Image (cartoon, rainbow, N blue to C red; front, side):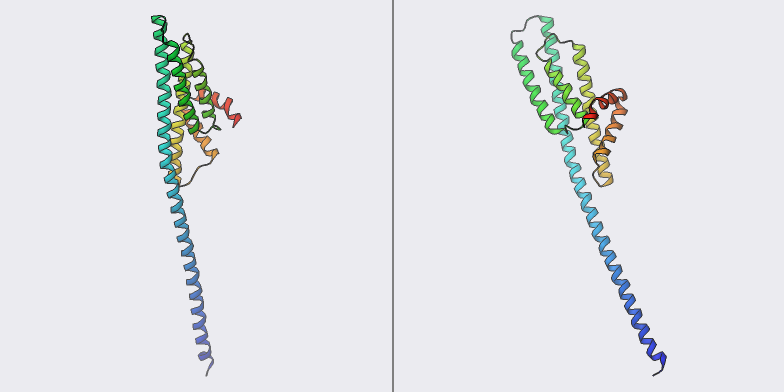
Length: 208
């Protein structure tokens, strides 16, 4: 047996070994990639499912905002009629009813919103101030309207920011953190009313 006869089978075995090793490594890599893809797809599905739930949440919050604003408008009209037409025998009963309805809606809104967010804190405070004026038929309407204007502004910022959150999370396939959410509120607030936005952050962001 010459040297070639000895070396050739050895080379063949070495080639087979490295081919097997390379194939095994490739299989493991493919397996890990497959697991990663499955994990990513699963994460995307979770984010999409949560996004769908957020949309339902947003619509529920919007309905509560509309209910609160409608009650305030009815209250103002009722009080204006009292001032124009004189004494209303059922005035006190109506005001108590409005107060109770507003409190119920406000409690529901507070259950939906994050109390640590500046806009939620601002909204809660303004709604409470508006409700406190319910029993005063002689409320200065210009102040009442100012409160209502700012309440509607805060409501719109909250709804638009939450919609933008859903879009970003769905596009990225992952949830955003508190810092990113604050950026979204900054963007939306500045777009809608820069002055009002800055005054809200200046007063309420320190509490978060």
